[in-house]
Amino acid sequence: MVTGGAGFIGSHVCDALLGKGVKVICVDNFNDYYDPELKERNISEASNNDDFTLCRVDITDSDAIREVFSDHRPDKVIHLAARAGVRASFEDPELYRKVNVDGTKNLLELSKEFNVKNFVFGSSSSVYGTNEKIPFSEDDLIDNAISPYAETKKEAESLCKEYADSSDLKITCLRLFTVYGPRGRVDMAPYKFTKNILNGEPIEMYGDGTTKRDYTYVMDIVDGILSASEREGDFEIINLGDSNPIELKEFIAVIEKETGKKAIINNVPMQRGDVPMTYADISKAKELLGYEPKVNIEQGIKLLVEWLNG
Ligand SMILES: NC(=O)c1ccc[n+]([C@@H]2O[C@H](COP(=O)([O-])OP(=O)(O)OC[C@H]3O[C@@H](n4cnc5c(N)ncnc54)[C@H](O)[C@@H]3O)[C@@H](O)[C@H]2O)c1
Image (tube, rainbow, N blue to C red):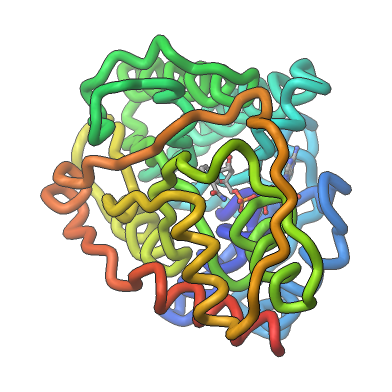
């Protein structure tokens, strides 16, 4: 079962699993946080595969999601469904809590009841917030979260730990670092910047361009997720990043190089919830998942540009 399977990362996970001959139950409610038509497109190819079953279900609807478990009896769950925007979480923190915390609890409870073997939870680097120690390591205290979104991911991680301790569920929480690539989320800088620069439209640069992000190519993230879904060990929290942060200004320069176009930059202040830097220590992922990011930022942006150019 892949929850959020029609979303950016989830749809790539579904495709990769189908490519390996694995049967996939995709759970998604196609909400309108961004245009649901894009989500339909993400899974249009997968939908032609006999091994792919689509369940248009909300993970907060306990009865409906129970029916999916009882009808399909998944042996593994990759849980990526969430309200995922940091900034939007300030507008409606209750909704974020309902989906990201209560929805996760529903899935953990049902996974326990239906004897799921392995549960992977898509957590976020946002839990590190304004952490000053770099690179961010899984052992760092996470009491610097600065958005409702980050708080919901922290709480969901705690729930995962509770369920792992009190059941046979094998759970891995993966802290994902700024994921980009084809099908990328339209509310995120990599997509917005690349699309606008390609079209000769202005981009909004938050702050002075010196904030740093550990941009990670989506297929590297997918490799890490699939590897976590094969894990036999006990509960773990594992970073999945590129471990190679770059400044926003430099990121824009890479897009300019790969598109062959000059960015038109509008300077705007930093936004609530923005952190100065993300930087993943990925030694644990290397050790436990054999994770090794393969696509550097130039290659990744090139692939994003090719996809946007259709
Ligand atoms: N993209 C990133 O950089 C990033 C970074 C850190 C963590 N994450 C996490 O990875 C996961 C996937 O993120 P994404 O970027 O692919 O986002 P996305 O919004 O493209 O995908 C999430 C999917 O979940 C679905 N969904 C949302 N609420 C649902 C509900 N109540 N019931 C059923 N489906 C629901 C959405 O329709 C969407 O298709 C999320 O949990 C997100 O928090 C993403």
